[in-house]
Image (tube, rainbow over all chains, first blue to last red; front, top):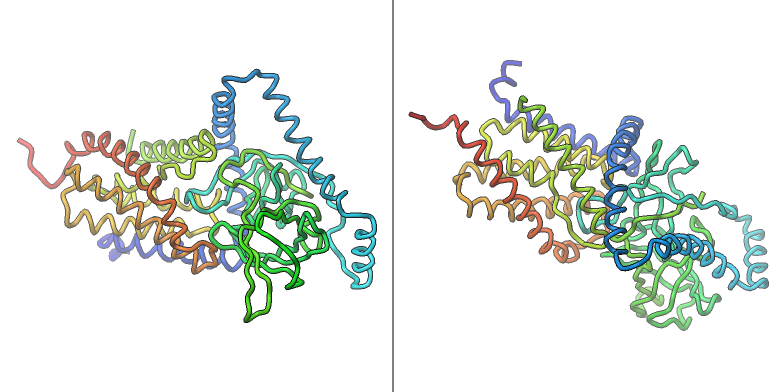
Length: 272
Length: 167
């Protein structure tokens, strides 16, 4: 104890290093989900932040809408929500009945157990963004009280946002698709026969490959989720910005820029 | 009000204000990291800097819990930045405005680089060049915030220096 009193700075540094490294190791090992204590802290902090963020959102919305009528703003909000639901419907409908049957037969043949139809959308506001300016991790004001679970898919009007990383009462931490490498099975919107997998995130883009290395895909093609795996079908992922052929792996590689502008997110929906 | 209460109030205000600014200007790729700036200024100009360093790491931990990729990442980064500030303080006069400006830039650079490095080790997906792209605006905003806090605080801190005599 005397040594600690005599060497306050060194003691402080050592204690913080031990604590920070322990937290970090635990957090990385648990996949960033945290524990009950961090969950409770998240709930309290979320409640503190929420009114201020809501006020800022109102001011921001008010300033941007100075030249428009209030009614138009309300209508715009409604249309955004409708658009979100319709976009999902439209993309689902573009999958022809035959193709759907084929997919279902394939699912049956492979004894594939997906998450089933995800129909319930719960909307929430973004209450805080990560402090780095280059990552896209944010917290929303809805959580376990609405039935949200870790791994739930998050979307907005533009397309796929990411997934819920951790959840507590009144908050969920969302990690965007470009912040964590995970496999996303895709289809090309213009030609639904072309399938592929996006498997790597890097510098704000996603890279992957088409299953058929001779499939015709071009820059500017829109990709949507195929429905196989974690993500439900028909969600817009983004546009292809680069197509190349990897002769070593004999794969047609695609680089995709996400459709969502992660930095300007204010409202998102969670699929449960 | 004692230092503890003042510090708590200042750091809570910075924490809320930072999120407020982020929500106020959606789409802007950089907002000042007020917790970092406040910690850096107070560690740099105050004599009893351990308390401010402690505030810095605690609020970095709170930021990690609220919206960080991994808990402890920001906390460890903040500690490394604080050590760099102590080294800088040892060699340079803390009442010189040019030194302060240089420190404000260094603090942002060190924080971003260390944060990026640890996040890459933990499985982050961003390359250093991508991080560098967001740096110029971040450096400018942080420097502005740092200098505002510095200019406000230096007047209050200087009369309480313990390393000089007053007639």
